[in-house]
Length: 163
Image (tube, rainbow, N blue to C red; front, side):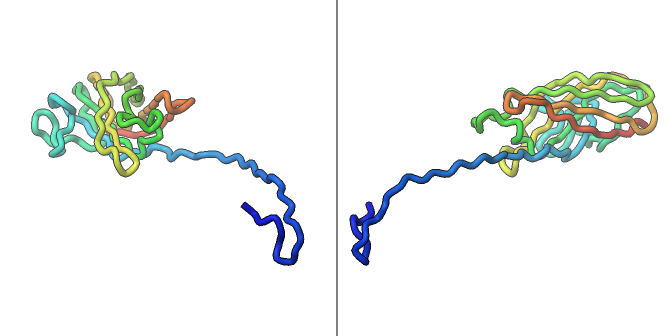
């Protein structure tokens, strides 16, 4: 509390003061860490901790063999933007859709989400089933990720090479 009198004998005048401030929190945009293709998935996830597919073959990086069905693993960095109130299990409400277009087009079926690393901004892998697609060359892809933590989905473009 303030003393009733100042050093010079004058009284202090007490007034309430307040300040209001509005601010906006900007969330980082998720970014691709990698795009991998496996013909066979393992029991827990398509790409194991050792970096191999379910059949112990190395995954193809941003490449898909033409006419062969398999699994596309899209690894995302800065995925904490999809957290729900910073809960310990932040990614349970994430859903995703993916679409490939080129010589042929297909919606990819969402298989599962695998948490790679909760620290460092959150890293997740989204696994999709890829149907047989007869296509050669570059193919554009669209990935849309939704969660209850964001009012609008995040849409990211990517590219794979059919061979």
